[in-house]
Length: 123
Image (tube, rainbow, N blue to C red):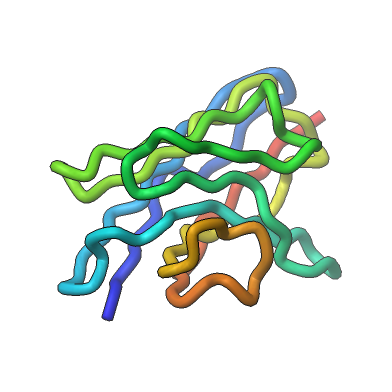
């Protein structure tokens, strides 16, 4: 199994930046795609960004493309989400995700979830 622990959430003003990190462990983590999802109050958990094992392929939701960047350092068992130009609409609980599928764009492709970290963007 895979264990995921997120950190880096917090309160930031609109236009600011935050960097989320996800520490991964487990015997089956090698070769997994990784991603980030988010869930705002009263809404479903939606895809934000994804990355394949080698880091050569990244993909994003249209709402964050150009502002967020996902990366990974497999030697350190870490996945990062750099969030710039934050907007109040980005306020949500952000979840790290892992799965054996090549692409993690929908919840059904995710095998493991982190506990979530709160990101709040004030206007």
